[in-house]
Length: 376
Image (cartoon, rainbow, N blue to C red; front, side, top):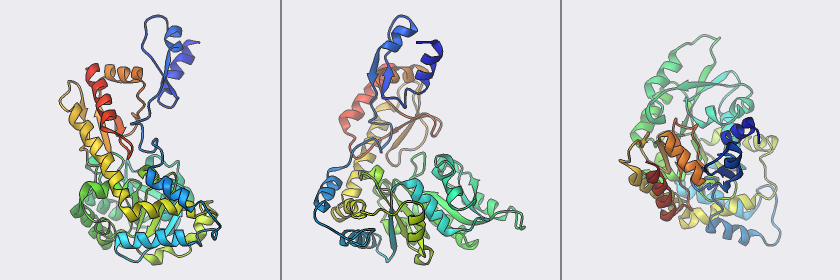
């Protein structure tokens, strides 16, 4: 194996199913020793389907039902969302979070508008321009704020920066709950942003790919964290929660949902066997497992934080408020974890990101923490 090939393999080892084991000898010898990567903490979408969702899929896999969401199971899931959020709302199911965010934003603005979001928001950093594509060119205006939370004063700055026809008029404020670095807005923070949005007639979109983790963390009701705080549309994540695929787009402002079904169809997001996307939601909303799963993930993140706190050279970058732990680690620790096969991301939040899921166990947390401690 050439030196260039070895270097390239090292660069992508977090994406490959194998990792290099630190051994003595030549580079070629080192490259020949490989172990399977462990994706336990790489992301909360690396885990499987949770038992409740799996059982729901099996139960609905019998007989014949109407297609394209015109079935009783999809209707029941929609009604359960209305019960959970304590309000009448329009609910649509799409395959993934990028589609949910992009189509929701497209329903809130015209191509000459702009969307204000945090500079590390997922719609800005990790959706390959999909929001701009589906909105036919709506511009994203980047706001700042500590710990991944938008500062209301920066929203004010962006809205009032210019008012001429040459500036894409701000029309939407996009929030993430939890955000990309795992922190959660308080009700007071959400309402402060709502006040700015109302003053400037901005609609509010919420990227809730891990919304259940925010609810479990805060202890506030889903209603309080959304429509009672001025949210017009929520993209409620199911994939990271333990569902195989499928996100719910929930319009609290029902007028904004006009013809959203057409957007879904045109974007290839209208499932013909919609019941298989809706059934897991039915089970998890009905028995509360959507919040139990989130609480399990959050608890494991807190445990990891506690176990590595105070280790030499290890620094927690952000408060652990949901199911993510961001750590600044010495190079030797990165090398040690890589040699042990641990896969994790290092390009998000400026440090090593460890995500816990519904399936993460305390034993797995202890093993990772022990490997970090061993390295330092």
